[in-house]
Image (cartoon, rainbow over the protein chains, first blue to last red):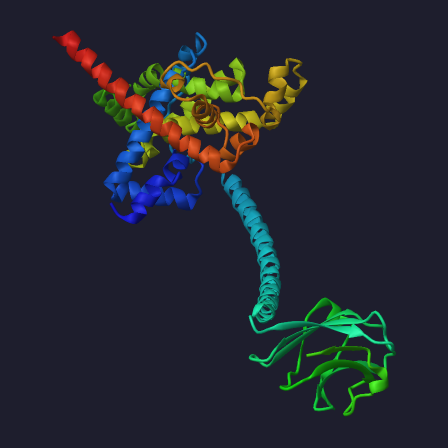
Length: 252
Length: 192
C-alpha cells in the first residue's frame, strides 16, 4: 500500500465521508479512491456495514399505522421531469435564475476585490515583518557574539544621569548604540558619538536620541579607540567635537 | 442484516422503479431510519412525517442511486438525516417547540445550549464500547450532530472528537466481526 493510501486510511476522511461531513471536493476524491483502490473500497465497505449494524440495532419502533400510511403513499407515476408546466413558469424561472446569478456574480466580484486588497496589504506587512525580523536577528547575533563588549557611557557634569549603551565588537568592526537616558536638546542640535584615538576625537556618526531609545542604531567603528564620547553638536554633525558639551563617556 | 440476495433485490427493484421494494425497505430499514429521525426531531408526529418524506425521496431518487458510491443504507440514512435536520431547523418547527413548556422539547430547539448529553439507551454493539466513544458516535451518527457541534457540546477539542470517532468505529468493527462470526457459528450448529 502506498503512503498516500495509508495516510488516507489513518486520517478521518472516510469517517467524515460516511457522516456526511465532507466538501464536494473531498467527496469526489473519496469516490475516486473507492473506484480505484481495493483497500479504500474495503475499508469503506467495512465502516458502512458497521454503522449500518449500529443503526439497525439502535432502531426505534415506528408508530403503528405509519407503515400502512407510507405504503399507501402515491409513488406513481414514476417521477420524470414534468412537461405540463406553462412556458411562463419557465420564463420566470429563467429570469429569476439570471437575477440570482447576476447578484451572486456581482457579490463575488466585490468579494474578490476585497480579498485582493487584503492580500496585498498582508504581503506588504509580511515583507516588513521579515525585514524587521532579519534586522533583529543580526543585532541579536552581534550582541551575543563572544567578542562583543557591552559598555555603558555614563553621564558627566554637563548632563548628569545620562546613560548610553554601546555594543562594541572589534573582530566584526561593529558598533550598536542604544540610549537609556539623554536630556532633550533643541531642534537645531544633535547628539554625536566620538572615538578618542591618541588624544584626537574621531566621529562615529550622529544619532537621534529619541528613536535610539526604542531601537538599536548602527554606528561607525574605529580601531584603537581609547574611549567613547557623546557630545551635543549642531544639527547635521560636526567635524570637531565640542568637548564642553560632553554628555556621556566610557573608557575602553 | 439482510442476506446478500435480498439486499441486491431491493437495490435492483429500486433502480427499476418497482414499487415492490417499498414494503421490503420499510420492513428491513424503516425502524432504523425512524430511530435516527426521531432522535433528531424529538417528536413522534414530526418523525413520522419526516419518515414519509424520506420514503418519497428514496423513491424519487431511486434510479439515481449508484451502488458504486456506497451501500444503499448509507444513501438512505443520509437522506433521512438531512430531512430530519432540515425539519429541526425549519422556522415552523422552532416556533412550535419554543412555545412548549416541556423543558426537554424547549432545548431541542437550540441543542447547542445543552451541556450534558442525553445518554443513549444503547442496545447492541454500541453498549459494548467505552462510554466516551459511544457518546460521540451516537451524537454524530444517530443524532445528527456535526463534529463541531459535538466538540462544543461536550466541551472537548475537535481533534479529540475526531480521534474518538476513529477509535470508536474501530472498536465497533471488532464487535461487528465477533457478532457476525458468532451468528455464522450458531447457524452452522443449528444446521448440524
